[in-house]
Amino acid sequence: MSREAFHELKQQIPLLDYLKAHDWHPARRLSRGRVMGLCPLHADHKPSFLLDPGKGLFYCDGCGRGGDVIRFAELYHQVRFPQALSLLRQWLGSAPLVQVAADLYRMQLHGHDDAVAYLNQRGLNSAEVIEEMRIGYAPGGCLRRWLTQLGYPFESQRQAGLVTAAGYDAYIHRIIFPLQGNLYGRSLSTSAPPHRFLPGGKDGLYAWDQVRRYSEVILVEGLFDYAALRQAGFRNVTCSMGNHLSAHQYRQLCESPRTVYPAFDSDDNGSGQIAAQSLACQLREQAVKARTVTLPAGHDPNSFFVHGGNACQFQSLLEAAQ
Ligand SMILES: [Zn+2]
Image (cartoon, rainbow, N blue to C red; front, side):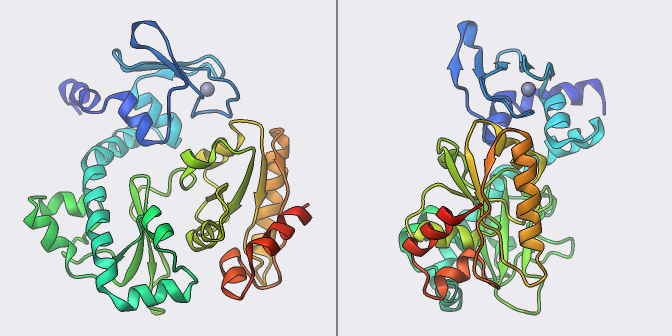
């Protein structure tokens, strides 16, 4: 990459925009346009991350790290310089496109009875929660045509992972949950792999911005678990999309003192329980309280509610958590 191209990439991605897109918000404004906030690179308890948006530079008093947007991407995604560059280029190209695709999928949901029936079967029937989570449906076979009509070149559709190299939609017969810069697609068909993400990973905890202010946070594995709890009236819920947390998700849980209630699947093979226990131990090492929730055998929070469980009963499980 030439010096010019390198400089141009930095110009195209203001550090503050990139940080905001990764769930970061300034806590305090300082002189000359500078801002302070919690450090996204370490478990920060008081704002020690200083950002100068004009210069595109950051410095953290807590972990002593600093630099430009490329250095930030290296540290944040824990990759080397060349990978950081390609992640940034990919982010630059695909963020708006992913948003447009999510909007198109949302419009499709109510035209497809099989998709709505699937949501109902998974116990998800609150129009409010479906709207809040911006849930959509990918029937397959239409995204490429739409995006092309809207003027997006095939190459950017492919680079964003929305369309395959052969020109087919990547998401077919899937319920779509928009995430931060990504889409999670749950297959309706049993013959396809159940879970699918766009390249680039799941990034942070789901809807973390709405949850981070709570001193008690329920952590679930799946977005259908999340939806079931939201429907039952729990607001302090987040989701890690799998029972293994990314380094970033882990830092988010540790950013301020709180009690975390991992409510992972009660699998026959015990993998959910083992993951919850090991997470609880790691959190305690960071002085974050953790109380693991034990669900009835074979259940996850979603199936707990689908099989007649109510908010009161789930509340009892939280109170009994150890
Ligand atoms: Zn730091």
